[in-house]
Length: 133
Image 1 (cartoon, helix red, strand yellow):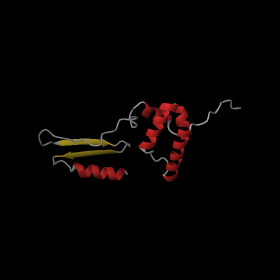
Image 2: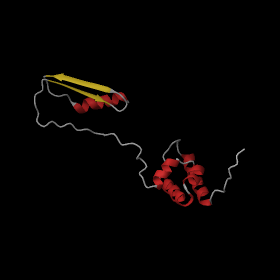
Image 3: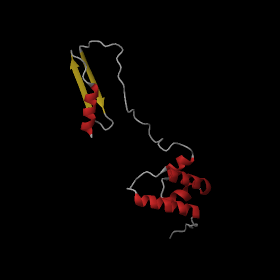
Image 4: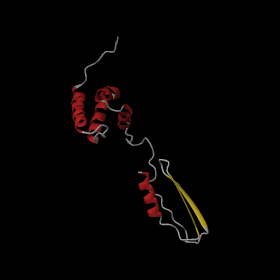
């Protein structure tokens, strides 16, 4: 038997719950909530507390807590570099060179060349990334 007492949900939370239900009913599953809805939930959490707001609104408790504390929402993981520029100090003739790349999903590419000009890096990397999709 459940002995937990259920207190009535404040009208302000019920109003936001209706807005969230309406948004969720018109969007694909797992669509990000608009910032305005998150901000409304944060304001309610300041007044009523985290759990009393997160539970009836079906919001991520920790996500709401981070927003309430003023932390950026996407602070979970550092972003991987999107671009790496290779700059040679002075063009020099190289007898042999080997370069290996590894993508974030585990793909690997090894480039080896001898006594010739450097390959077209942009074309090679673009082709490799297209092949990984």
